[in-house]
Image (cartoon, one colour):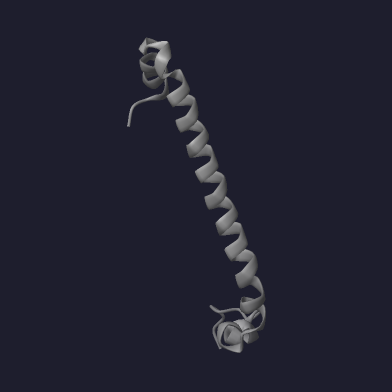
Length: 72
């Protein structure tokens, strides 16, 4: 991957006729990233209730607070 400074230098060397395409591409990438972040956030919200209430997923919560490494 090219370093930021190299990329900026390359963009500066392009003909101005490509600027609109570059702006469109950057906008597309930002939109895609925002959608991915939203999707992950939404998935986490949806799973929260399941993890709190599903007995199969919370079976080991009974051990919360127990010192795992304590010798008996």
